[in-house]
Image (cartoon, rainbow over all chains, first blue to last red; front, side):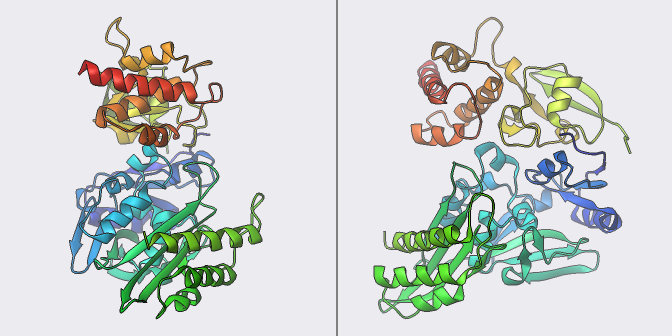
Amino acid sequence: MKPAAFEYHAPKTIDEAIELLSQHAPNDGRILAGGQSLVPTMAFRLARPTHLIDINNITDLNTIRIEGDALHIGATVRHAQFHEPVCDGVLGHLLTDVVKNIAHYPIRQRGTFCGSIAHSDPASEWCMVSATLDATMVAANKTGERLIPAAEFFETVMTTSLEQEELLREVRIPLLSDDTVYGFEEFNRRAGDFAISMTLVTYRQKNGTIIDPHIGIGGAEDRPRRIKEAENVLTGQAPDSEVFLKAAKIAAETIDPMEDHTTNAQYRRDLTATLVQRALEKTKL
Amino acid sequence: MSNKTDIGLTINDRKCTVSVDPRWTLADVIRDHCGQTGTHLGCEHGICGACTVLVEDTPVRSCLMFGIQADGKKIRTVEGLAKGDEYHPLQKAFMENHALQCGYCTPGFLMLAAGILESQPDISDEDLDEVLSSNLCRCTGYANIVKAVRSARDEMKTAS
């Protein structure tokens, strides 16, 4: 249970980090952010990076700010920073509601938002939030930056469209207008465990009917994503229990659930239907 | 590959200079090279919480941080809780409430609780339960640990 040997780098600037990454990524050099997922995999020797580029000393990455109509979350912003709302309005509250479900208190003191996104565990709350709210990932390499929409970022279990020489410098989440309502639901067997399924739903209303619905599912499939088929059920309808139930059913039918030794696909499907329904009901509270 | 680097950290107000291999976890550095063996390693992959210590007064799992990352940092372990012969209110509460049996997980629970009670002295019972769910204990069934930490919280509030 001891990590294999590696060389350690602690750059002070983003440019330095990117330079080191481009140099060492071809030989399995990796970024070390909070380390709450990477270090356990190294302890098991499932990962044996030859170089670790520790970005914790780069102050420019520890920033969280509103720019334009989005919340910009830098690469070393830790989960615990969301224990209190990081911004006014609905988004700040939503993130505070969600963060309590991420692992445990000490893990949240070290683990980072962007680290979770780059690690891309299907059961990651932040990955699901990013997919549901159409976040944008900012990937930086030696030649510059590119913006990756969440819908194109998460590919499958722990696999993203991030290139090995790219640093996930920032994640941008669109702010939510004050009339946005949301509901978050997660199910796991013990506090802090990985989600077996979870959902985030948001929508607004115009003349008593639903507009701009978002239904995201995480933990159930190999990656988090919005379920358009279920969102379409809501659009233009009055927010009542009957239509919620229908959307939940469609969401559960649409997904392609993962199976493991304790959870079969049908279980995850049933669970997802229940969670979506509960999350939608929460929007009326 | 084992290029050692000299780091300096403060453990329980004592300076400790160590030549570390980057792959050594903070837990290993604390135990094997700073001689503070009160910090216990259970699972070594961040599940059990036995190795919880305070880094800059914040509870973290010392098996999930490399020693080299603690350069210049202030570390507190279970050895630093008592003031001379006077036990910390948490230690007293653990004894009084029978909150330990084998004692293996105890240093981790104590440091987790010390960290949270310092930063949130008025923490609610419910929030405390959530925080204490971080660590595993295989003996007590948790009820007495929860009781002890609640009692220490109340004691520390009256004392301050």
